[in-house]
Amino acid sequence: MRDYERSTDQTLPPGQYVVARLDGRGFSRLTREQGFQHPFDSGFREAMVHTTQHLMKCGPQVLLGYTQSDEISLLFHPSCRAFGRRTTKLLSVLAGEASAVLSLSLGVPSVFDCRLSILPSRLLVAEYFQWRIADSVRNSLHARAHDVLRSSGHSPREAHRHLSGLKAHELRALSQATPSGTPSGSMGHDRGTAVWWEDQPRQPGESPASSPSQPTRRILRIEANLPSDSACEAWLFDRIPALPNT
Ligand SMILES: Nc1nc2c(ncn2[C@@H]2O[C@H](COP(=O)(O)OP(=O)(O)OP(=O)(O)O)[C@@H](O)[C@H]2O)c(=O)[nH]1
Ligand SMILES: [Mg+2]
Image (cartoon, rainbow, N blue to C red; front, side, top):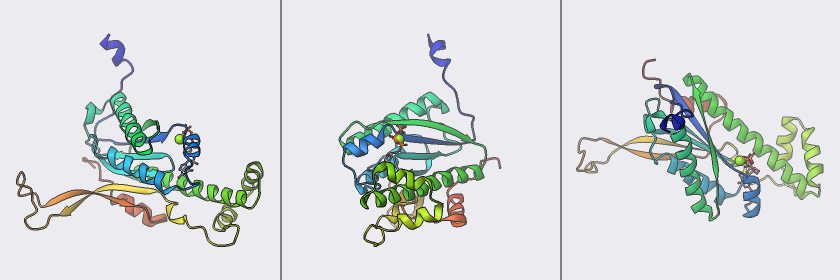
């Protein structure tokens, strides 16, 4: 029987970059039914950041987390050995932990799927996160422009048809205007939120009795205003370690 079970289990190659991406199942409906503000709801965003922080503390060694819309990406340490690097365990435990924590935060069943990518180079890891940030920017522009058209009297179908013919700069101009002509207030959320571990020096006398020589402590940092373009790539590179043998 064990052989039948193991036949669908794979082991991730050691010493490689692995990224997990969790995505909310049916969250278009969930966010609508819960009456969350569209396109950005600060309570929903807080619950997603809280879930990301939980995933970074729940076992596998995660270096960098990133959340936008209803998704969460996690970069594992290349030498993370959690669950013997078995894909079935990683996928099911991460999806289960995220679903449990977000359900408790929102008070309704909230389910995530999970997928894994093996990325062969540090550059590809940076490109992966830039890809998700670009997706966030594109979705935000689109959602905000859609809201502007809806609140100026267009039907959902008309708004959709109008937006599909617009170029990027036209979309941006439209998304920055409210019907009354004042700038929209939710621009700061466009690039999503990153969470990462940082070593901070301990204050004198702060070292725990169990490890008095430990000069630093690890804290979770949160950044909701990620830099753009080449500054973003540099920001990401600072948080992605080189592979042990490169
Ligand atoms: N109101 C609101 N909706 C949000 C917010 N963040 C994400 N969403 C919604 O979450 C959905 C995410 O898109 P998808 O993952 O493609 O849609 P889904 O319904 O979850 O579909 P599956 O992932 O395929 O199950 C979109 O409909 C977004 O509008 C938010 O802050 N407020
Ligand atoms: Mg989804």
